[in-house]
Length: 377
Image: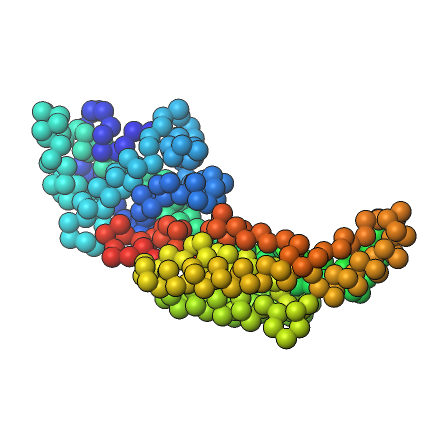
């Protein structure tokens, strides 16, 4: 998979046989260097999807392998080639003509010590194909990746919030297994899966609401039954907080939301699972760039979490223990709900810390120029 600029010398291509210009608009916002090291953060599958539809695939060690050859090139080297080609557009009209290309490659004379015409004409002749078959599909997929990263924190947090909602005491017997399930919880899980599917389909179709993170646009495409199933989750509020551009404001809003979800008057009611997870995240990953703010947020988040570590049991848990023991005949038919004393609730406080930031700050802004002042949303 040789770079078009460095292809070996071949018989010169007649100028009349070459395209008048090469359209560079498809790769205007293509910066492959933003994916360097991204596999460690996002996983191989998500990053490798960026190269679907092109003539290369991504290996787990950040190499690009030709689909029809055994040629391999490092991701950062391919990124350098793309930026070299874009800089050759001297009049910045997003078109590259042969004169611009020849002027741009004059620096190669020292390296080749000979007539560059055959090399340059051959490279220019193949460059249009490279742009269309390799770089353009990658660029289109990069915009989809940006949208996926826009939605990912919201989808993950909504799932965590759902897991922390106390189970309904209403039961429904299933036909397949005869087991009893918490049907409101199961309906909510199904609705969240439907929500994820709607977002994924919107991104695949490049619908404006999906590419821009428009939550109302997403809800309008969700079935009414799924909307009702999610009524216990402050969907829009969570999404609006996570979309705030100011990191300090975002962190403060998350803290206030966690405090609100912490039981106050009634120590046996509230979304402790969610509150603890958010507080632990803020206590470990508050990195806004303001050292003073980060220190204060870390201290108060950890202090608040320590204060509520003993709030794990609940009346709902106690009632559920008794009820499931009756329904399960003391454990003969199924496993009853175990008694959970205060402090025994699952914390899972590293959920966000391990996989992503709630403000997406460690995610690469895959469309941002490396020369930009900031790569954050």
